[in-house]
Length: 424
Image (cartoon, rainbow, N blue to C red):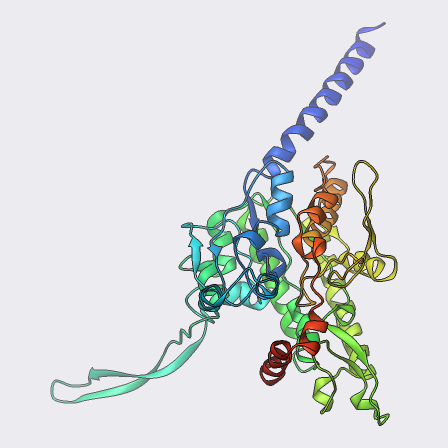
């Protein structure tokens, strides 16, 4: 063997060893300081509230733990209610009152997890725990001495700090906006999706009035540009938005009189439709579908531009809707296939009782799809969450509550339906 070939072989050996070492170090470096922006899916909204036991199952918490890291956040105890606890009798009058008021179970000075229920890319940039819009201004009188004897005023623009919703108040407190938090945290890895509420608003309001493509494109691009400027982010993960017209919150409705604009998709808690605003007709569904496609195309483009992993949750959800997802223990026992609904007797499901957000089992499914995408993109071997264990300890899946039956067959449920109908 000549000396040139010897050095080629030796160099190749060092490259193999070096690549292996780099791969092992890269995961630790990548997740040395994960940061999170996002919405209710990231914060751990469940039932109709956020609290410690639901926050523990949010996807950034699960994925970070599986990767050998962690995120810090302000622990909430409300506002609003955990439907499951109320319906199962685990939350009485005082518990309900405390939950509605809400507050913090514990706090941190600078959370590395800043995801907030109700957020989108616009609020990521402009809503703090103290101001609904940190950029908002109003006109006010400024008094001054124009001369030594003449006291007068002029109109000037001043900050207009309106109180944000309670989720932002308790979740962000005095740490700034989600973007400002990330700029202070300087994360190594970013959970960066806050796209869903740009289109989910249509399902919750049964209206397309909230769609604003220009705002979405402006603010997701601004968000990612600012993230790139931080300089510490080595990688991240984004995900597409599932078909919001297929969530359990909505169900088909055919108008008895055959009126097209009274037929379509209505909220599950409505027994009938008395106004076209209470239903998404086929034209509105088509508008939403087109908007969703444009949103997901932009999310995919941003993932490529940022060098992030991408989880296609729209494809996942479409498959869940069509085929379900097998739940199976290591010993081979299976309670069946989970469907894209909340659990019912003999039928596991991925949704919580609001028909919009995942239950604990659903969060594990969601987390595993992100883990798969991260492993595929970066060549890691992050272990998946045990979906069977998540199902086993999910009291909603193990002891289902038929919320729709409760709302229609009990006086208290009928009252709740009436109240929801008034305010939604």
